[in-house]
Length: 129
Image 1 (cartoon, rainbow, N blue to C red):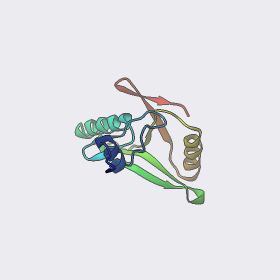
Image 2 (image 1 turned 120 degrees about the vertical axis):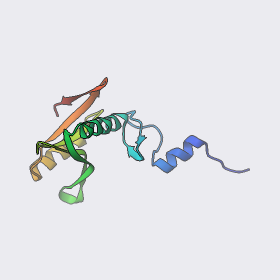
Image 3 (image 1 turned 90 degrees about the vertical axis):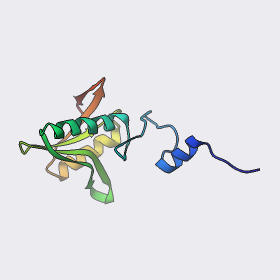
Image 4 (image 1 turned 60 degrees about the horizontal axis):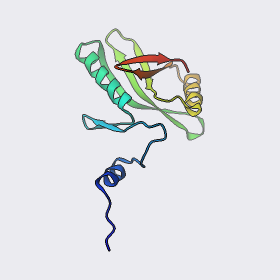
């Protein structure tokens, strides 16, 4: 008897997905980039439109911040606007206590303010954390 895995099991294994997500987000691949959620992928698409409209010069994704004790926090997007403004964006479906703590640690250690956005239909709204 041979042990065979299904196509879904194979895709989960290759993508690093361990099955169902705790918060029911679905990992999505867009332009060859694997996003942790559909909302994050949608925000990427929104940034591409802003870049095409020349409102955004460029943006970085998964920007690491090193915290005390070797802890890392990864910011979803660092956006550089054409006017010179920089925004630090984290797209959230569910705000966890761990996120709240890491956000406070990043903002205390680095000169940044993190904006948390949540997808609401086809828009993104700012949420207070």
